Structure formats: structure tokens, C-alpha cells
Length: 120
Length: 110
Image (cartoon, rainbow over all chains, first blue to last red; front, side, top):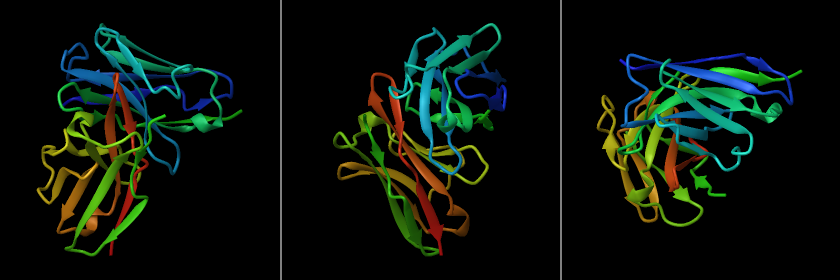
């Protein structure tokens, strides 16, 4: 059974960079059938798509975050990563990594999520 | 900026039928938007109910169904049960590799 696990600091200071990694187990991140994505959810609010990456390194970003976000992939480690620069309090959220099927557009596997708080 | 709209909250009686909708600020939703629906309970990651408009995810009861109704995507729950009380999110493909989630619908079963 495929598993995704987010890791990274739970507390980031304002104006600094939020960095998270998603480790994929029991499945290959190099599959041509899937994208790998990041989604976040501020406390008590809805889901927001941040962006996706393909095994080839092609990336797609939410236009509202594009200027501050970078998603990268390391196929040798079966991991992909998220960086959000110049964070402020509204970036406080549970961050999820997920797999997106190319065919049909199903975010079919999710990590458990990790809470990142932006505070000094 | 494309906005995906959902009812903020809906109530249904146990055993009743309810339809949640998912609209697009820029126009009509079609199968080309690959609408999918997710159920989320507090403290948990979302889980897929429906993808590609009307394909039920593995293990999802057949009381959940997806469709296009008019100019919106729709999730219908037939014979609602108490444990269907959750938050429901739709997500749409809006082109150029971009996806947009709706604001979510809080479903109450009472």
C-alpha cells in the first residue's frame, strides 16, 4: 500500500522559508502515471491546491502562490519537496502531500498532513 | 482568478437524499474539468469519493454518486447515514496543469 509522509519544521518565523519533504514508500515516484502534489489547509478553513510536479521535473503552481513557491523532486530518494518563501501568518496551515493520477485526476493517496505554524 | 463554488452548509435527514454542487466562476463545469469529490472528517486527510465526474473510488458505498447537473458538478448521497456527516470538497481541473478546490460543504445529518 502506497504511503506518503510529510516531514519538516513545525514552526517557521515570519519572512523565512518553509521547507517540507514528502517521502513516498511502497511505490515509485518515477511512475509516468502520476503527478505529486502539495495541498494546504489553514486551521478551520478549506483546502488549497499549492502545486504539482511530474517525475520529469515539470511543475505547475497555483497562480496566487507561484511567486513564492518551489516544488522539486528527487527520484533517487523517492521524495519531493516544497519551499514557500517569505512566509507570513496566513501561511499557517496543515500541509498535505498527495499523489494525483494523470488519468482521471484523482488525488488518490494523501499523507497524514503536518501543521506548520508561522510565528516569531 | 478562477473560483470554485460550493454550498457552505447543507442539512439532510437520516435516510434522505441530498445533492451537493460544485460550480465554476468562469462558466460551466464539464467532464473536461475532471471533477472529483473528497470527504474529510476532523483531524483526517481527505479521502476520495468520486473522481473523473462519476467514478466511485474503491470501497466507497454506492449511495454516493457523481454527475454533471446543469452547469455544475454534483455529488448525490442517497440514503444518508449519520457517519456521512463530514466536510465535502470538490476540485476541478481548470487547464494548463492547474487545479482549484472549492470552499467545501459542511454536511449535517439530523
